[in-house]
Each structure stands twice: as C-alpha cells, then as structure tokens.
Picture 1 (cartoon, rainbow, N blue to C red):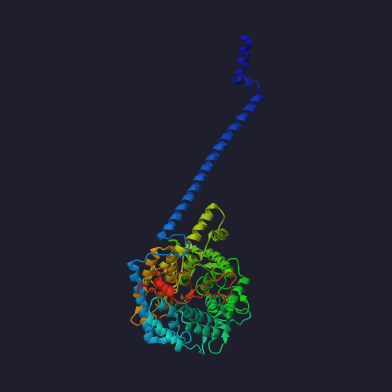
Picture 2: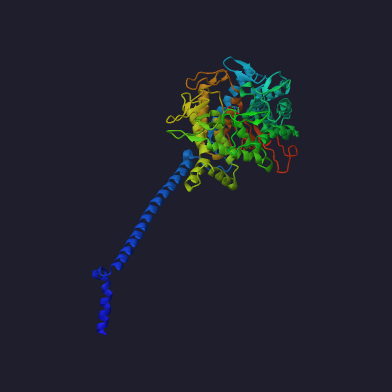
Length: 591
Ligand code: DMJ
C-alpha cells in the first residue's frame, strides 16, 4: 500500500522532470506552443487595455475641453445661450434712463435740422444745409421718422409731421421709384405710424402709394420689376443687373403688403407679395442660398454672388419675420421652412479669422468663397436670436439634425456643432460686428471688411453712412439675453457717432472711417433705424414688445395681428391699433 502511494506520488512529479520531456519531444513541442499562446494572449489583453485607457483618457479630455468651451461661451461676456424668449422686466437702471435721454436728444437734433433745412424733402444735406429728393420728393425722412418720434414721445414733432402727411404729401410724381426702398421706408413707415397712433390717415396714404407700386408685380413670374414711375406706372429693371431684379429688392415687401391687406381687408397686396416667395420656393435649393440677381421673367438665375450682405440680406430676414407676423401658424409654415434651410446655408459660410478667431460670414461666388463681409450682414446675429427664440424642443432637435449634415456625426462633432449653432451665430458674430467699429481710428465701422490669414479684419470700402445693422442686432441680443454688455457696446457706438458724425446742422456719414472726413448726407434710416434701435436698447422691454410687434427691415414696428390657422387675411377681428395699452405699460414713463 505504502509502496503503491509512493510510486503514484513519484509518477505525479515526473511531469516536472525535464528528462521526461526530453524523452518525449512531441509533448515538449505541445507544451511550448501552449506557453507561447498563453503569453501572447496575456500580452495582447494588456496592450488592448492600455490602448483603451489612452483612448478613453483622450476622449474624456476632449469632452472636458468641449464642456469648458461651452462654459466659456456661456460666460463670454456673460452671454446666456438660452434664448427661449424675450426677457421681461429687464432692469432699468438710472444710467439707462440717462442714456436713452441722450439718444432722444440726438433724435431731436437730427429732426430739427431736417425740419429747418429740408422740410418735406427726402433727405437732408447737413453741410449744404438743404434738402435733396433722392426718393422722388415724397418726404422720405419725414415718413421714416414718424414712428421714432412717436415712440420717443416727441408729440409736437409727430403732430407737425402728421399734418404734412395729411395735407402736403403727394405721391403723383413723374419719378422712377425703387419698389423696395419705397415699400420699406414709405409703406412701412406709414403703417407703423398707423399701428402706433391709430390714425387712419396713415393707412389711406399707405394704400395710395402701394396702389402706385402694385403694377410692378405684373411680370411673367410675379417677381416684381425693380422700379416703377409713380405717376405713369412704367416699370423697368436697372441695366447694371443684366436686366434682372435684385433678390433683396424683390423679396422684401411681404411684411408691409400683408400688413396693408390686414388693415384694409383687401387681399390683393398680400397675394402679390406672397406669390414672389411661392415662386422662389419652386426651385429653392437645399442650402436655402439664392443668388442676388433674379429674373422677373425667368425666376432664379443660375450664377451670381450669394451673400447675407448687400442685395441678399433682407430676403432672408423676411422669411423669418413673415412667419412671426403670421403668428407662427401653418399658413406661414413654408416661410419658416425656407428660413431654416437658409440658416443651414448661412452656417456653411461661417469661418474664423486668424489669429484672433473672429467669426464671420463669407460670400460665395460660384463654387468658391470670398473672405469678405458687409456691415450690412451684421443684422444676422439679431435675426438668428429672433429665429431661435421661437424654437421648442422639437425644433431644437431639428436644428441639430440640420447641423449634423454639415459636420461629421460623431459625439465630438455634434458637441462642436451645438457650440456653433447655439453660440457662434449670436455672441460671436455680434462680437465681430462690434469690432468692425472698435478696430478703426474713429470707432465707426467701414462698409465692408476682408479677412486675410494672420491679419484678422481689414476695412475694404471705408465709408460709414450711419447704418443701423450692428445696433439692431445688439437690441435683439439685449432683449433675448438681458446681458448688459450689449448695452455697453451700443453706447460705445452711439458715442462714436456723436463724436464723428454730429455737426451743428444734423448728422453726416464719413467718407473714410480711417481719416474721419465727413460726407454731406443724413440718411433717412439714421432716424428710422439707428437712433430707434439705440433708444430701444436703453428702454424697458415693454416698449415695443417683440411678442406684439415685428420690425420691418427699416425698423418700422408693425403690430402682430392675432391670426389662427384657418383664418384668412381681412377676417381677423383683432387689429388693435394705437398705443393706449403701450402708454399704460410705460412707453412714455420717463419723458
Ligand atoms: C435700410 O434701408 C434697411 O435696413 C435695408 O434693409 C438695408 N439698408 C438700409 C440700412 O443700412
């Protein structure tokens, strides 16, 4: 028994004896193979774990970086990225009251200079101290200023202007008027004066001028001609467009004409203007970007510049604003859809400068991009803020998937995309536009900018004609974020106008923002837009609330008429006019 136990134990240990294997080479080979395989497996697992660890730590580093970027962007100048709606009860501090009084005083100076030297003419030439009829002699500055006077509580001035409109305004001029300029300044200005004051004379006059403009839409496509003779009705497109019309000119009458139909109950104005968008929608591209020249005979042309600046700008603005004017109902859903496509196109044109990473919107010529941006395109941050404020969760999701098509769909790119969609278009573009001003010796912006690698921004066309687009965006961003930085930026710009553009006889533009040499024109939009947006920037948000009003492209607020999905124009019983309610809300509280 003892022998057999000892022999079994020695047979167990025989596997540890090398001579056992030397006598059995096959087993030795097998053992070696097993050993190599196990070692390789262990080594492979360890390498994999190490690789994954590196990858995980890189990814979490990237996620942390993106989180930090997001935090940074949220706190860039304190800008909140939650643009859910217009902020109510924004603080109105003594300095804001003081600043809006200063803006009001600027309006009084501009207006009284116009009254003194150019009464009834289209624009004032302050250096020559005389009026000039750049729009056919229809009192463009006077009409453009009506609502600003009213909003600022300049009642006596408003009344004098109202009397001129009632008794002296005559549209029967043998003059080839721009359909676009006349619509945005005159039809828009009159309708706004009506909506604010409740005075019917303004609708009558708006109807008179609109009836004179209307034959311009009698074209094969319904896309209007560019100019029409106010007395005789002859129409034409300018020769320099190659016989075509201009996108912004043809596509920026909808707000005014829809509003006119609502206030008169006569559908014909709305039908003409809406038909243009329906026509353009027939061949609207996926990126929503249209060339600036379009044909009244054939529709969208094949090749010309694409831009959010001159000649393109307000077409995109009106896609959004008609949707807002139409109470965001299904009747105007096509406008919103077209606008969203165009915003996808806008995102594809966004680039950054070096070395300072200013965000800008390129222009497109055929297949190639030009690193140029007009100051005119500085309305875009405000438009984006206004458009995003209407987004519910479903729409945000849509915006995300829209943007996913622009970037590769990975976690990283989606986060990046969110940053671009949510932050860049508002805060970053507005920062660029503010720097258009800050980067020149006069602190006033040039007409356009080029972005060369390594040089950030440089002025191209160097005049400044008192344009409003940047302060317009600051106004919207202030209303939607409540961030005081935008008020500060607006104040800087106002002070630069005071320093460089104010002369004893009004306000003038600059021929060159580098030298400060002055021109001789007080543009009517300085009173209609620039001073109005600045005044509203320093006013409580109840003054022309964005829930109740929509601004046309010349800054004339039109009251939003309550409308339902199944309701047609003219049926609405709820066209409230006059600002009795506004007065109670404190519109004139501080005057
Ligand atoms: C204004 O007449 C309007 O804002 C238009 O949409 C663009 N140009 C001027 C102001 O710059």
